Structure formats: C-alpha cells, structure tokens
Image (cartoon, rainbow, N blue to C red; front, side, top):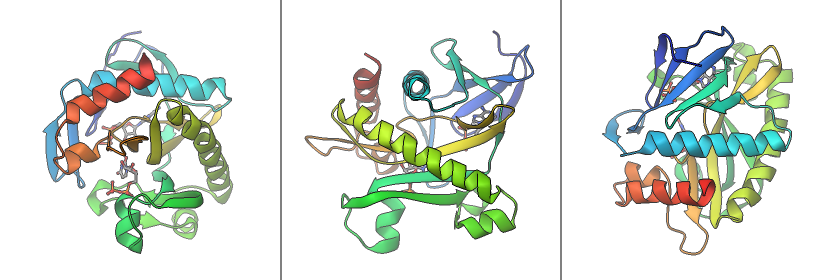
Length: 234
Ligand code: ADP
Ligand code: UDP
C-alpha cells in the first residue's frame, strides 16, 4: 500500500490517502511542538520511534479486545490505519497528578489518584484545547451521550491494560491523551500512543521519559525517546 495524496499535515504527523478509500497512511515526523505550538523544535528520530511504539501498543491492545484504527506498520515512519471520523475530543486519562491537573488543583506532582480520572478537552488548536464537560460535548453535538459512555468505558479498560504493560517495562504511566473516531465498525481508538502524548516516568528513578523533557528543556530528549523504544519494542 502506497501513500497517494497528502490530505492533512498536523504538528507531528501527515495523513495520506491510499488506493483504498477506507484506509489512510499516517506518516510520523520528527517535528515537536509544546504549549499549543508556541514552542517548536525537532526530536531526532522521534517519527521512527513513535511509529514503532504506537504500532506495538495498538497491536497489544488489539490482542486484548480493544478495537483500534491500526492495520499494519508499513515502514519506519508509516502506519496504515482505518480511516475514521475523529471525534473532536481529547480524552485524557490520569493515574497520578501532573501537568495541568497539578496547576488546576494545587496538588503535588506525583500524588497517586485513588481511581482512574478521565477528562475531556475540546480539540481546537485556536482555542488551546479547552477542558469541557459532558454537557458541553452533548449540547454542542461533538459526541452523543451514548458515545461518551462508550468512550469512557473504553478509556478505563485501556488504562487497566496499559498500566501493567508499562509497569513490566519499568515505566509508570502517569497520564496520557487518547483520540477516538467513528467508523463503519463502530468507535475505534485512533491517532497514536507515544511519548509525545503520555507522561512516562522511570519507576526506579522517577525520571521523566517523555515530551516533558522537550517542553521544559530537561536535556536527554532523544535518549529518553530511545529508551522508551528499547523497553517497548525490543
Ligand atoms: P494535530 O492535528 O494535533 O497537529 P497530528 O500531527 O498528530 O496532530 O495529526 C494527525 C491528525 O490525524 C490528527 O488531527 C488526528 O486527529 C487525525 N487522525 C488520527 N488517526 C486518524 C484516522 N484513523 N483517520 C482520520 N484521522 C485521523
Ligand atoms: N496531551 C496531549 N496533547 C494535548 C494535551 C495533552 O498529548 O493537546 C497529553 C500530555 O502529554 C499529558 C496528558 O495529555 O500526557 C495530560 O496533559 P495535561 O492536561 O496535564 O496538559 P499539559 O501539561 O500537557 O499542558
């Protein structure tokens, strides 16, 4: 399957059509952005690492009965996926306090949550992806109540699978962002699961191994992505 026409170029990936109308190719770039694209840069080899890591995780989730858009990894940077209609909501799943949750609540970073916390953000770069609740989502018709209930259930199931998956690799899964899309097969997990959209801490040292190293200029950015790649893909 070959990439035909570029239909969308985002901050981290490019989408191409293919010869099959229900299949797209996701091409993973090295470009990195943070703080609503105010900070821009490159993480050498990130595209290769993210394509491999996301493929591994989607394959794992599929074996556990989670329907995803993943079809096949085509090359170092290309993933064949089922075309979906993306639901314009970023679903953030949290196991411990970090990032915007620490800011919003004043709770200390790293505090473990007594249960899985699911949050909803409206996917709109111009607005800075504002946090919204289920009433906003239903009233503005971004998704139906039934879809949100299904998505929340899937997000929690995904979390119960991914926490031990990362733990066995010495990684604490602190929080992450999921996107879902509508397809003829129903609602599928789409987009990517990579260190770009997850907070991943080394279980022993508590060192950050994700895009926070780029966001906050912590150094060893490439090395950390490489280490995640090693622990997930080798
Ligand atoms: P952004 O749009 O936030 O800059 P990316 O650079 O990652 O993000 O671009 C990838 C885009 O592709 C995202 O907007 C994402 O919602 C969308 N997408 C992911 N998976 C699929 C899919 N299976 N079908 C259609 N669109 C998808
Ligand atoms: N996240 C993401 N894309 C976004 C916003 C958040 O991938 O547009 C991820 C982020 O990497 C983190 C989690 O979602 O793993 C929670 O992010 P948070 O709300 O704490 O916001 P941030 O600190 O990234 O501004």
